[in-house]
Image (cartoon, rainbow, N blue to C red; front, side, top):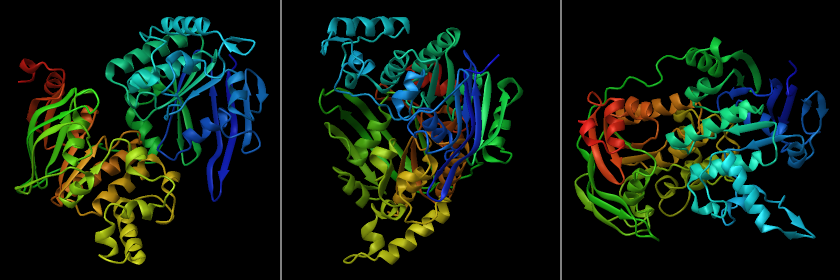
Length: 507
């Protein structure tokens, strides 16, 4: 059987960096082939070569599609060859409807006039074929992230793709949306569509894959049948070493209460919808408090409200080290000793075109740089020290943040807040979109910070992460607190029961 796609000895260099070094990958029709590796291993770069983002002439090696060597000068060239790629960053226009997004630039028309009836009929048929209950006339901006991801897939399939590349497609999906996506992908396999799947979620990789290819440091480590591998062997191939327990053993000594929240309520700014409903909790110095719940439970909104970054109506009381404080803006939160590693590091955590140094010292500039004059040397020393402590992989503090892998970007965000010398640190999805090796380093950082006496409040959608890191867990459901468990009391069944509102089961 001949592969539908062969990528032979692909090499790609950037100034001073060999991102891909002789990488080889093939794909068969109807195959689900996963591509895994640490952030910075070269996965996304390889797919950008395949999709024409990096045009022919800027890389070495050959791309062979259905037995024919091809050279793609543009993304459209790759699309015309039957290759569609769905990147981590969605490329939808939120002001346009679902149908307009699906056929953007390829609208059915006559004499230059769009045939709107045909446009919506074609989009409706495509959505129906994919079993997606989405109205094609709905503006994409009105959909949740999960539904937007499914629209992106519909858009790719509208091009009659024979090869579909999915880069971290489930990062923002709920469990039910993931199952919907997987049902769609199974149907596509049956139709003969070959799929390359990039994910850090190895459970998904093993659930769906026939074969798995591992990249490390821009090179192909190997390709194997999924049935011949285990999660541990894949992780070992990814990081170049055997990996023991993912979560570090912890024994934290708790001090006095660092943060106490009483009766916090928050509403959505435009619709006045109740998002957080009368939530109270506290966290002590040296404690990791996990906040669990399903998507839309109000976890991020809870942290944003405390931090002064939520702009709807809110009520409740905040106490830092026993003192009642008024926080109406992030700057007031910082002054009161609260740091916040946000869920979306690229939008809210980093200035991507600025250096590591500028990003790390931004929030704590007054403390680091001096009261009246900014000391660049003191900034540089602080950034270097933080990079060493957090093991940020970069040549110097002058490296531009946007060039770093996801795991290293997350460490820069973490370093930024640690340089404010916080009393309480909020972590919202601290390991989203980063690889297993980087996750373990972040976990070790969290454990060490708690050991040093920092109070940590962590939101995570990954139940093993919440249970593996937290000393205590509170659970939200539809804005209400529906459960609280110590580490010894918590079980997956109890936490999930509380997250779904089944209070009787969670007891």
